[in-house]
Length: 459
Ligand code: P1T
Image (cartoon, rainbow, N blue to C red; front, side, top):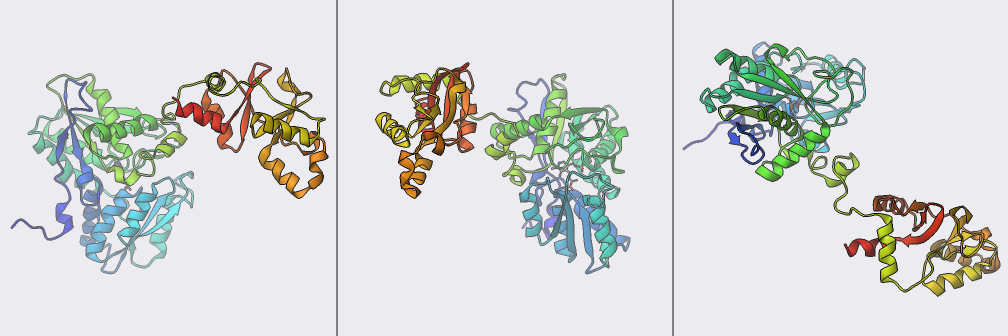
């Protein structure tokens, strides 16, 4: 029988997978180390158990003690798994930019999670580092492994991840690409591999906005990598080259790995892969590039795998429709019975006349202008809308005899013929019932929700 005693025995020994689709343009061999296959779903399982066992040996944590740690989530899972088996309580502090999935995951492992603001300096009392320090000081028997200072972090990679890469490539690896958070992974792997062969090139992948390759820190969305200050656990002397990667390139590359290779990966995998593809372009058939993929896309289903989130953040365009408002107008003219370009009601008319016009043309809203056929957009002063009109007339039976100017609503939004249909979509989704379309200053028509829908359906 091949059995294991504890889930901790299943950490590490992750496979190398050839990225022959994503890397198809490259002459070199591109191999991915699949760290999401660790039991807790990330590379950080490797340091969780290692930091706890070191603390036990040094007497820093006693039975029944509490582990407190600032984490972007994955280290928390690694610690929580070990803590479950060893009977420690866990409290994790996490910045609020981290995904809801990671927070729920930590709670599922029985940990307590304290959410702190992202947009504060590390030294602020509200930062996730400061809150973790305060809790460690206040709670009796609390211990903070502190992955940003704890040398057990790089040491775990020196002892496991580095030798695995060396053995799995039979010493033929030429380049290794790794995203940098605490720097534990790159420092441990880099140190071990350089000792085997000093010619191996170690590449750090860094998000735009992080201090490792930028100046002033700026916010960015990819999780787990980049920093606003240099951690003690990062040994930059083993890094031969840095590649800076935007959020957009990180997320789109992560989605590409998922769709082309069938490996569901997190955002920082996209960062590392983008950097690996950049480096790989310059290499030849004898080169073997190993890129480390830290965690699974399951942590980010509500983010980079959510179309709405990607659109809101400007990383993908609205699917499909490349059309201008002029085409919607032209479609409407072709497909409905003839009527004047613009039907309006004069502001001095009685409401009864407005209702007659609505009925005559079978429409639900009308611009209100100085006269019934305005020749300039400036002449439009308001609108009559079936919905609000009904409400008025229902409550005030004399409203029918009032002047249109007394009961009219705001003018409809005005858009130009040359604008993209996105502009119309935006106005309609903000609540407008219809829009007036103009050709410069000349009114060219009115378009409603159903006009846009019919146009889109016909595409
Ligand atoms: O910390 P480091 O070994 O440099 O690994 C960086 C990294 C990359 N990708 C993801 C998804 C990560 O979660 C991390 C590091 N994570 C933490 C620091 C943490 O607390 O989970």
